[in-house]
Length: 433
Image (cartoon, helix red, strand yellow):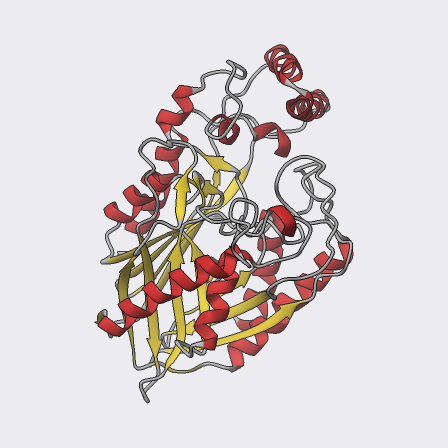
């Protein structure tokens, strides 16, 4: 017998706490909230194995925090740690959830960090005790009637996420317990005049509308690949819209609802399998002299890019102290019958994400980003080769995704990093046969 449980709690964002995103030292101290931020938990049990997914309206979740709370949840409910997942919506108008690094992108508030951790444990407990029988699942894809994103890296091709991938978990009475939905657009619709307002952005708006329209008791959003996809509508770019996040949400939910009404494929085999592996990421280890040369290039560009040079200076100091600046990130694949969730600990481009989903062994595959931690951007190989070194007169998107690495005290990734991520996940998936 398959069971599922869910629980949620509003995250109250204090006034004047810093918000995470939009670059160095933006001074974004919260002036209020538009659209509640949530922490949600989802528990799935197939009679033998249990999986749990923790959802948070945040830009990302720190690796160390995910590992710490995963072990606490695993111990309390006797769950295999490899079956516990943390996902984030990637809203750029939320308090930071990280321990260190990313200097200047929003100063973490220790009280909020502790409050979030307590909330995670509360919703996990509530979801565990909320489990009830699920008769079957239903999965499908909803085509978008209009583009809701824009490709900021390859503007001419403008390839964006064309579908909403969805799964309904249905009770014996035919009602929907959980509606899982996945799509890839950066959570930056609430910018401009809403720059200093805490918000769950367009994904939060879509979740709210799903509940208001009673499409499910609770929505579970998983962010698809969108490292190169901006929102096509935003408060800054579209001042005629009262709320750009709501506009995207309305269009999105209308297409999702239409697809659900047309029906998807019924799935009765809901056996759970999961695997997780901590992976040492490949990097280009530069010498101190090479890093110093890059720092000088960043300083020569402009005052903003000079902040990357400051981070390189800090990296050099850590290297001299003997610190290992390579990173391990947690890669995970969760299978529920013919559903496969391939969790990426960072930001991934749309075409590479499509490759993973197309080459998955499951009938319904979901490439899910900013999950279980943050390894930064994993740009496409063609993007990496387009900008082989810092500088060159181009400093916008495409370049930015490659050369943001110093802000987390990390080395640059090699050109084939996207393939490395794809192969790691697809190989993990094979282990679940």
